[in-house]
Length: 187
Ligand SMILES: CC(C)(COP(=O)(O)OP(=O)(O)OC[C@H]1O[C@@H](n2cnc3c(N)ncnc32)[C@H](O)[C@@H]1OP(=O)(O)O)[C@@H](O)C(=O)NCCC(=O)NCCS
Image (cartoon, rainbow, N blue to C red; front, side, top):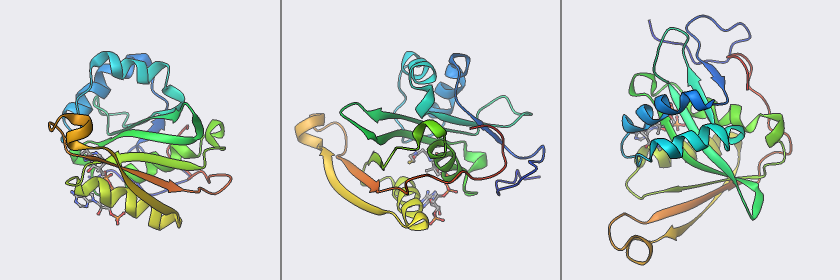
């Protein structure tokens, strides 16, 4: 039976749970990213730092009966613009895709009390990542947010020709208090 990802006041055993990562989650995050091309596989140490120093701005989805993670978002507040949440990577396990899990992860992350003052989501996407463009454009459209786009890291200038240009999307301004979706456990 497929897991249900709809909002639910009484989550069933098939509903994923959402929470902040802990250092022990590092290896599972690394494995999920490795299974989610075209994401860059960062070092295990990088994922451990995300699960510790950046845990307040990262979120994972898991299922009590499954060892591997279902979903993950890493992010951080941009140091010189702390009202902007930079979304670094979004990953959903292949078996869990197409049911809105990525959107729920982002909504739950933004709904954390500690992130109520976030006014913009910032991310970067390469031109060929259709799923990523669809995800962020769909998210902005559903919530009525504007998107500004500009090239941030350019292929020749910043990547020495070895990586496609990363386009920066700035989404917002977000509503003053981001609403929390119901069901599916803790922030
Ligand atoms: C991108 C990704 C996170 C989406 O996760 P998901 O839970 O399946 O996403 P959703 O079900 O919330 O779908 C989000 C939107 O993207 C669209 N979408 C998903 N995969 C797509 C694809 N391969 N091509 C085009 N559109 C796609 C959906 O139709 C949906 O559009 P809508 O909001 O207009 O309905 C997932 O496919 C993934 O992990 N991909 C590999 C890693 C990656 O590219 N990460 C960067 C993502 S920001």
